[in-house]
Structures are given as structure tokens and as C-alpha cells.
Length: 274
Image (cartoon, rainbow, N blue to C red; front, top):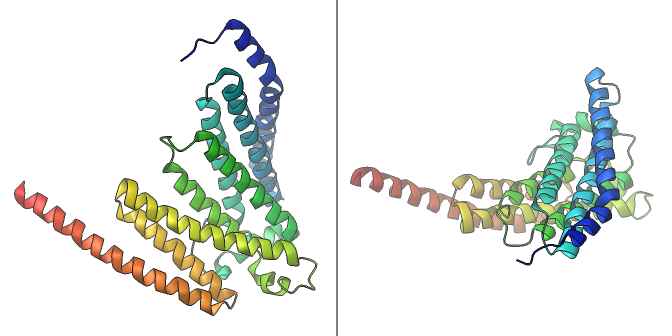
């Protein structure tokens, strides 16, 4: 690794000054909003929406810090990326506190929570989660493929997928898919994003199981997201798509049962030989 000169280091620190100032401002605003939340629950959901926006901005600046480091010093700033990852976790958590973290459940189970943000129109909801997803993808790209956090992102992606689903007002979603509705475009885009993310989360958990952990819980989570995707299709009246997912579910469930049996047999053999 080439030695970094004092001049290069100086130029780097000068370049990142505005981003460091922005980061400090984001952290200060987060602290202020959290302090307001502790004092009372009035408008809590809207305050948490603000926190989601702030954490997206915060993570973006951490990603920029690493990008500048990579460009000027030929070094990836792991500390900045880790801080960015923690910021996105907080963004997802703040969103979950508004809309719930439920993966597969009837809309009636969390509809009451959504009532707190009833005034937030479909376009703003879609743009918020789309922006969050974009920054999440930028962060994963910044880490690269050869990172110890590769499989840790599966959980964050899954939680993000569930939150994207849960912030959609399903009660009015079908009506808003009418081209005459003023909320047609953001609603359709939001629905397409949900389908994509649920399928992607299922696949990523299956991949994690097959290539990394071999933990049955990971496979079960993949199936959990497939069940959620099937329910979503059914709610929208997309019976053909629901049947397609059902066939995939049957294959995955059979594979899970076989793998559980294999692991149990392996465990018994290990105990017997021990």
C-alpha cells in the first residue's frame, strides 16, 4: 500500500470539512427530535418521519466521506461506512416505530398505526422509502462484494422490505390503482417496489442459508417473506401471481422439511458417536 503524503492527507481533510459539518448538524438535529419525543407523544409519528429523513441524509454523507477517501487516498473509509450502516439501521427502526415491523400479517393488525400518518400522501410515502432504498444500495456498493458485512445486509434489506410494505395504505391502494386517481403513479410504483423487495428478501435469506449459515431460521425467514408476497398478491386480487408464489412456497417448504430432517439425523449421529 502506497504511503499517504502529508499534503495528500491535508487536501483530504480540507475536502471533507463540509461533509463533517453536515454530519454534525444531522446528529444534532436527531438529538433535538429525540429529546422532543421524550417530552410527549403529540405528533410522534411525524417527528419519526423527520428522523427517517435525517438518517438518510446522515448516511449519505458518510458514504460521500468514504468515496472521497477512496478517490483521494485510494483507501476505503471503513469507519465512515460502518457509521453509515448504523445510520440506515436507525432510519429503518424509526420507520418501523411508525408502521410496525410485521412481515406477514393482515392489514388490520397495523392499520391503526398508519392512522397517525393518514395526512401523508402516497407520493411522499413512496419517495421516502425509495430514497431510503437508494441510499441502502449505495452503501452496499461502497462496501463492495468482499466485505464481512455481506450477509448482515440481508437482515437490513428484509426489515426495509417489510417497512416499505407496511407504510402503504392498503385500504385505499386498490382504488388508487385506477388511472383516474391523482395518486395513481406513486401507488403503482410503490406496489411494484413492494413486490420486488419481498421477493428479493426471500431470495436473499435463502441465499444466506445456502451459502453462509446453513441455519434453518434463515430459510424460514425466506419462506416468511414469500408468504407475505403471496398475501400481498391476494389482497390486490392478483390470483394468478398468488398461485405462482404458492407453487414456489410448496417447493421451498418441502426442501426445508428435508433439510431439517437431515440436520436432526446428523445431530443424532454426532451424539451417538460422541
